Amino acid sequence: MTAFWILAPIMVIAALGILFVRKAVHAALLLAVVMISLAILYAVLEAPFLFAVQIIVYTGAILMLFLFVLMLVGVDASDSVVETIRGQRALAIVAGLMLGLVLVAGLGQISLGSGVGLGSANGEGNIQALANILFSRYVFAFETTSALLITAAMGAMVLAHRERLTPKPTQAALAAQRMRDYADKGTHPGPLPTPGVFARHNAVDTPALLPDGTASEASVSRVLAARGTVRSAPALADDIEELQRQIGDAPHAGRTSPAAASSEEEQ
Amino acid sequence: MSVTPYIVLSSILFTIGCVGVLTRRNAIVVFMCVELMLNASNLALVAFARQHGNLDGQIAAFFVMVVAAAEVVVGLAIIMTIFRTRRSASVDDASLLKY
Image (cartoon, rainbow over all chains, first blue to last red; front, side, top):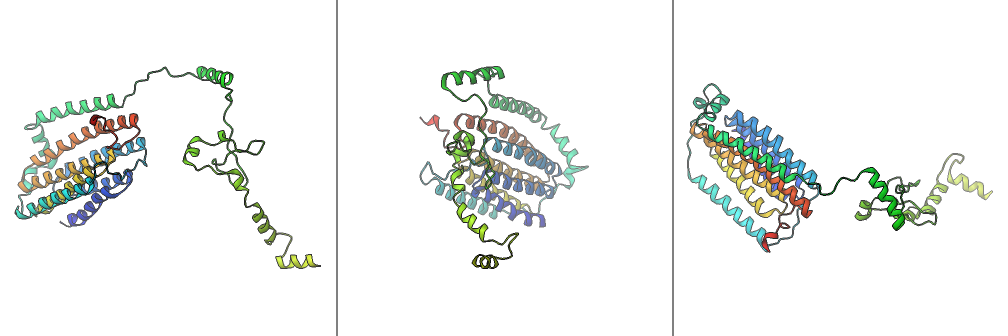
């Protein structure tokens, strides 16, 4: 029971965390904690086959699938806290508490005794015993499972498949389109200008300056512009006076100290 | 060794999964809570298998895992399709059947 009393609080805390964390990725990682702890509990409960299957299928395959879909959907697709049905959240929590109370209180009423244990049922090993039952009494259910899995694979392929409605543009067609845009609308046919790189700041969020000193909109990524994280190029030059004053004051090669420098000037 | 604590733990996890399905708005997190409920029921099945000295419970848990895998594959594909057309993974945005 030591493993149980160590793992049970971890599992309950991790499961509660799934309810409260804002980011879906964190929920997936907490679910992984619950699932691995469950696998260990299966091992304690004399189910070594389910221990392996839990880790391989649940933690290895299903959770990785969750993480892949989160990656495709966008990691920061976090929950909105707006309630569409008023009072739904509070009612859900009350209903959940009542369900939990009823379940736990009901289970507290019954006494299960010490249990038989799987020593005789496992016989010459858990996996052999499971295979004996699975391929005799449950063989029809097992065969039906294969139909279910094939249907699921087909369904996922049909749902995730996207039909291409227009032919894929070739490089020649793209070049012709570019020249047509230049002829019709005067769009620049060449590549976009590179972002401005200055002595004070060397990231791509600085726009390039046009000859008249204004910033070129085409030189920064549209994504950065949409996020509003583009730096203002003239603002980078705002504190130049201040910097010059600091550099002028600072002791550097050729001068011993500011005091000595000022005394020299006085003379 | 009594399995009562395992059953209590499984009912607590099931309740948490239930509340999660009811309160969370992100379809993927709702799905994770469904998985949590399936796992909780699996724990009860395995615990009762040990209680009765009978492997049928473990076979049932095995089938639940198989069905859960198939369910996750199709469910996540549906979420992907909805996200592709509506640019949202929230369960509130897919409400066209209401109107």
